[in-house]
Length: 300
Image 1 (cartoon, one colour):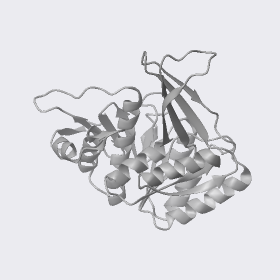
Image 2: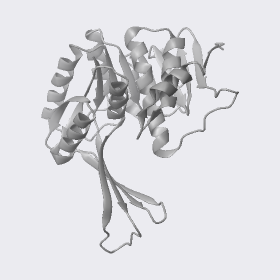
Image 3: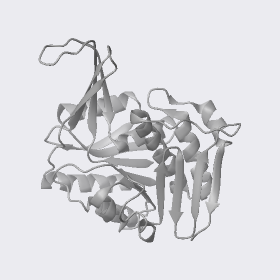
């Protein structure tokens, strides 16, 4: 069982309307609710590909209940720690007359000391049956920045490999506990080049390309179109979906100790075959597997 942990999930509320006017009542034509947050997106991809996955983390209030319900409809099992405050919402209003989208994002909820204690206990329980843990995303108010470090240490005690996908001080604290793989939010900046000395491996994601840095070598994988072309770069939400699919694609190989070429070939093919609305195109995935170029790079 693969466990994903999302400590700051979001309920995405999407409104579609025509000719939106500020300062007036606007009629919404369509409403869509979707569970958001990096760990939940990774769990969705893993489940769709056929892996046994449980999404954990924090959720509260009516927004938290809608997040649980939406994941349940998608077939993703959840074991969230309940909090008293409302999970945050992101309301996206699309004006179909001109294509403009305006988004309002609520602040993260505050997590109490008592809730932190229950979260740690629930997390340890999930480790009992886990083959890998994916720690993803930002932290809500009230959580210590070293929480990913603590969670990585708990997993190490249980013999469970950790994939850490984060940024800032949360990434630094987590990487210091030597997870199996670190995926920084940014691929450049202070501290990124030093991460391989802390974590076992670091994966830098740039579009559809993946560069992996380890203590013993470097690998780069990218997708080539048949005939020598390259797929178009995805932007916006499509770019986020590609990144989530790439992270999900790295997880099984870490859990099962595949070789890096096999891990990267699977991850890049899965990223190319996944779309946020259409899900997994299994036939395209099989085709992309033969079009992934994996190269070991010289270590300078």
